[in-house]
Length: 142
Image (cartoon, rainbow, N blue to C red):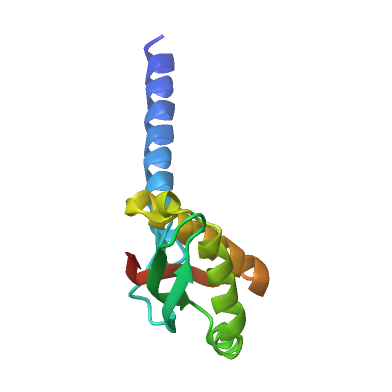
């Protein structure tokens, strides 16, 4: 009986050690340059595309949004393509912002939602996941 208990305890200990090691190495190597689902913005492969300053009317308002936008990508060929298609990018940003009311874009949540919408739209247009983020260097509603 004591031998059976010793074998069971041994098997449990081996499984526990294997589980801990699996979790440790899984967390260490599963990121592929990303940490916790976030992009490593300090990576040398990430480049920035300056969209620059833009103004756009808001829906149902006499106010305008003034924006200065940067797009982060992790593919130099995509950067070149996007820079050559800047008019398409600006048009998509304008369409998205013109469809928003003042209430849609004010505050942190408004900007986060607009950022997510723009990121999704640009990924669809350029058929890539290499667009990693969009930054509002400036966002003013006046």
